[in-house]
Image (cartoon, rainbow, N blue to C red; front, side, top):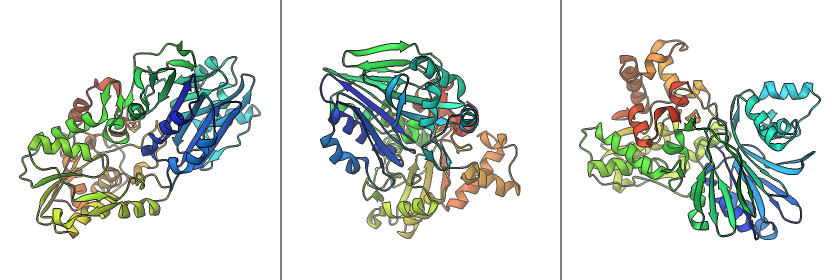
Length: 462
Ligand code: SF4
């Protein structure tokens, strides 16, 4: 997961740039970076795997000045600084290029080299910059990137005039423009807007390019209607206060929880969510069932990032174990429905969440996942998981006694194969019952037509 942000103002914009970045911290990836244009172009990048963007960049933000800037929270070092025939510019990207190797090889053959290496591969942002500079103008270069890549990349380019903002051509990720008097901002997450006094003026369309300057926002390239926005933004990755395509994350999660409740006739003592993103699904469940929403597991501090983000499984497990603290007085003797945004590997849910409820003498634990079983790793944003790690894959392999080939029957909620797979996972998690959200209810909760959503995680098709 990554986020990008930029600000252009008639005045100094460093404070807005810093807080816009801070409000993308929930995406908690490996690196946080900014570039700002004042008297000259300055850039700062920090490893934030085990710390916060805020604590790393606060002091520096006090000394930097400028009226235009960009930044990113992501899995690789950005912004990239480029000296080119278009002048000096800085670039940040959000997304993933599946055919990066083929494109890098083509560039190597043409005599190019790469200096920023991430996890033994080329840096995606640097790759994009090298494709852009091959063309006669920045806009042509951006179009060239779109024509070459298999994947999806949104980007921001900062130069001495302002910031180009470009939403990926498939519309997988989002970019919104906000405005207040004399300042314009562009962000992945609109939760950055309210406390900085910005109002959303536009959601960029897929492939659309706009230019933010101290004079305002100009469209440079039309977008297209067709989009495949990531459904997971609402279910898991987005911040509750964010709104994409005019649809708020928290409200979708409440609708999703209500839909889960509609399919249950359980007698329960309380509804709970796995913090943070399970919370609003559980609130929706509790409101619909008219049962208490309570917190049997509290997260110690937002300082613990999302537990799948630290680079090693061992580190992820440690974070998962330490961040949730059980409250015995709320758990003991109670029949609990526990809402979770999604079940990826299932191991953390089993070992560090459900187990804490049993250890504290819960009477029943019913797990409800807010999306269908995850069947495919994301190919449009850098994913830390492989197909083999997914609990669904492990279930099918155990049920069939061999490496799964055709899994289509397991994707269909009406088949016996699907039911057997869910029972296997229920058993593996050691819970009283397990149900997943149906595809239909998830789409209904989001509120966009099916053909406007990326559902690749669940269907393997765009
Ligand atoms: S594959 Fe999944 S996580 Fe990736 S963009 Fe599509 S829905 Fe989102």
